[in-house]
Length: 269
Ligand SMILES: O=C(O)CCC(=O)C(=O)O
Image (cartoon, rainbow, N blue to C red; front, side, top):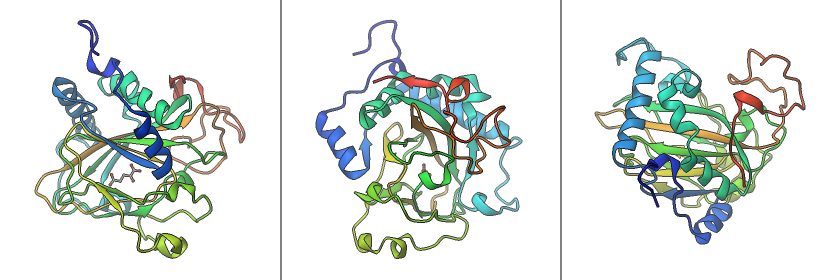
């Protein structure tokens, strides 16, 4: 319930035990209407403004693009440079959901705006996230993927393969030149993915190991999504290269905890 002086981001979203069990069984869940009304508008506008300002103003659809830019415009850790975005990255509503679903006290690993461009934004190939990250632990990292505008099959919503978060040993997928993840894990070949079309303000959560995919954007509008990635408190640094920790954060050594101001604790269970 929201009291007179509390805004929606400061409040908890109702979550049932069945939903928590489903997340832990499947490795993902869709939750509808997590952020709505003026708060959704403010989040959407704050992220869009930040992406535009970090892209040097209006984005030229005809510019030369390479690598990830074929898939989406990606801006990482907006919370550190944009106080209006930080308010949402730190907010109780998202963080408390992440902690209840994972059953862990959680820190922000990073955020990312994921804007798939009209007509040209390519598919995001099937992949797992955790292997890209410089973490010594591979369990219980999770991402909230927030649709800032409606996400549909036509503009590139997310799909997931249930149960794949149990697979810890396959090699990372090169998103720019992807291997077929189903050749690496043939036991999941032929399993029907769960495709999650989302109204703006609805979200998915996925475990960092769950196989996921998003289609190309075939629409005339930008597919606008914002993700917040969480790590369990106590996660330690592995030394693998990553844009969030490279150039190396001052004094960070293999085995150190990723904590402090760069990786703020946002929810305690
Ligand atoms: O937004 C997309 O197209 C893919 C996002 C993704 O892979 C993720 O959030 O882990």
